[in-house]
Structures are given as structure tokens and as C-alpha cells.
Image (cartoon, rainbow, N blue to C red; front, top):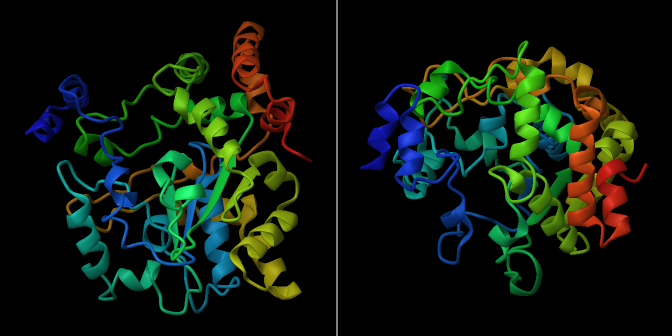
Length: 349
């Protein structure tokens, strides 16, 4: 059983990968969306499938606020994994989608309430789920093969590539030690959140170039979502546009989700989706693991998912040579479509 490799401290994940195990080992999306396995999805479900380190947690929280019209008193947001869960996340080595699906529907929280009421409340006009996948994973729900009976909606978001790499530098470091131990040392604590950040950022930039280990995080993601951006059940946004015009973004999301907001409701949502509010409430975004009560901690360290949320970090942290390398890759991957190239670099605003 390859999952036994995770019992080896610090390097178990390497043995697992060498044995042919998928990486990252805790993300297992395939079967969830395939024919015969996707019955758990319902009409009007929303899948927030932003690129890694490109505003996923932010958009999940905003989507929840829109569906409850900012009414946290009646529908409190408790944690990303409670209210807008990541169904692809394995909660312990060796678990299966069948086991997780059952637990999502039957788990009772420590306060005695059903977990299902947090993510599948009967009052919600739609449910919200997290992903980072590209449209080929969702081919049964987008485009020609789309299941017409289930109008699942997809919110995609990308950001300037150098900013994405800069944000990815401290990411591995910011996972909790408890979660890392569960997965045999993955992701490794590489010092990217401390004084080694520039060194780790340089390594991450190389890793995220096309064809390399994390090349799919940016280049594949942008190319594949750009192809389907005009589908009626897809909304593709740019991180910097949302930062520059949050009220406009909230209106865009509400329209896409079919939610009518009063001026007062919209203002409340804009306030809650702002960086200041989220920064004051970091405990909501640490990714608890409700299906695995043996894991006492959270996936992320407190505050790591509301770190900076800025635009332009990539211009500061990388050398001129590194920036030139990235620009060359952008032109090779996106240069056949000037609109796409300009969009990914700058957004529309």
C-alpha cells in the first residue's frame, strides 16, 4: 500500500512520488466529475476554480457572502472547508471519494450540528465548491459535452504570472506542521515565508515555467480557461481587476449567480470581501479538516491565506534576468493572441 510511505517523516512523500503516486498527494479530482460519479453535483452549483495563489479563498468567501446577501448573523461563515468545501481534498492518506462523500453528508460537528448544514443549507440558492482544475476536468459540464440537466457554473480567476509566482513562494512554508506530518513531509517547509523568500521565489519561477513541475499552475490554466471564457456558465476574472474594482466585481458575480442585491446588501458584501475585513478574521480561512477528527490542526497556518493580496509584487522580488525569462515564456505561450497576452499581464482595468 503506497500510503504507508507517508508514515516516513519528512521524506515519505518522495518515496510515494517515486512509486508513481499522484502529486500533490492530497488532491484527487479525477473521479468526482466523471460520468457516473458526479451525481453529487446539482443544478446551479458553483465551482470556484481559480488558479493556485490567484484569489481562490477570496472568491469562495465572496461567493458565500453573495448567496446569503451578507447575512452572517443568520448564516455564519465558519471556515472555508465548512461552507465552501474542497471536495477534491483527501483528508487522510488512502481515503476514497466514496468515503469522503459519505462523511460530507453524515459528519456531526463538535457543537452537535450537521456539517452538511454548513455547505448544503436548504436556504442557499446555490452551493459553492473549491477547485483549481482546468476545463478538461469539467468536460461533462462545459461546452459541447455539457450535461444540459445540470447547469453547474464555473468561476475562474487568473493573475499576473510574476505576482502569482511571488505569492507561491511562501505557500509551502505556510502549511501547518500537523498537515505536513500527515503527508510524509509534503509540502516541504522550504523557508519561503522567511529570509529565504527570494531564493525560493527564484526556484518557484523555474518550477512554474511551461513544461516544468508546476507549469500547469499558470500557463496551462490560462490557455485552457481562455478557450472557454465565452461559455454561458463560465466567468473568467482577473485578480487585479477584482482588486481595483471590488464593487464592480461583486455586481458581476451576483449577476452571474442570479442573485439580486439591494444597495445595502451590496455595500455589506463589499465591506466583508475587502482585505481589511478578511485580515481581521484570518481564523475563517485556515482550512479545517472536519472529515478527519484525528488531525487537530488546520491545513494552513493562521493568517497565511490573507497575507498581502497586492498587485505588483512580482516586479519587486525578481531580478531583471528572471523577469526576462518569464516574459519570454509568456510571449511563447500567449503571443499568438495579443488580447490574451495583455489580459494576463494587466487585466482589463
